[in-house]
Image 1 (cartoon, rainbow, N blue to C red):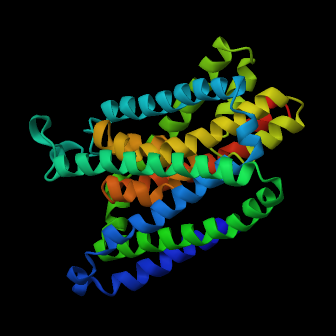
Image 2 (cartoon, rainbow, N blue to C red):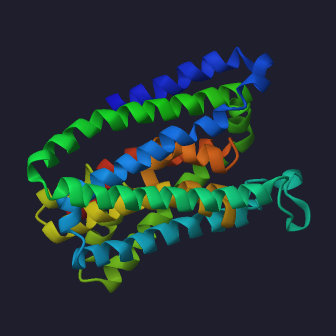
Image 3 (tube, helix red, strand yellow):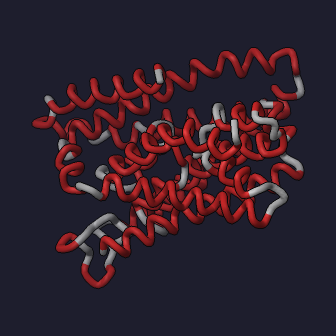
Length: 324
């Protein structure tokens, strides 16, 4: 919670500063491009950490396969939840409703360029994660003397990068000046979509429990980590379920990584709000700058609400399901 307070303080402060510079908005066009730098550095560093992390590397066998299966189910059902909610609310895939819907299903202005940029960024981000994992494995993981030191010292680096990223987001939103109007415009939808995403995640966990060697309760507990890999696996392990704990850990890592790599693709190919369903809790911190860049700025509202709801529910659902 202390880190979240730092992240959001940086964003709010930069929002206030930028709000006073709106009359000079044209001078800050470079901000949208500059945000790529900390994003790329962050995903490279996260790749390094994954490649150097013994828990992750050691879980890449049979447990890795199970983690991929539950991740596909959870992410797929979460996206499906958003699609169904959009259908109920009569919204298009860009988050428009009623008179704001794009006629005849045409793409918004410049959407074709955004589509190309999104695919390119997905490739770049995926490549950086892969490079980071390879370097982390061969140069850090195999040198046990530097492994712990690297993982320990990279923690504050990630914190600093996240502060920088969210400061950029706050500045961008402050220049735009429409965030509060977007919240008011979204109304109840701000709460309905996060509920749909959570429901989709739970359904994915139930399906996984039905088709795997785990029980339904274990499957739901694994899914209900919502990407929080530092919390949920430990609770599950303490309850006496080591296999479920290992699957939970790797699944939650996968969910966040797929969000980091895939948000540009999901936003441009499936839907803006659907993109907020992919990373879980990370939609409100690590992935927020990516959501802001590859979907409309008002989509950030859905990502924040989703991450916040999941933060509240993880300590409730996981212990309840696993009997901790």
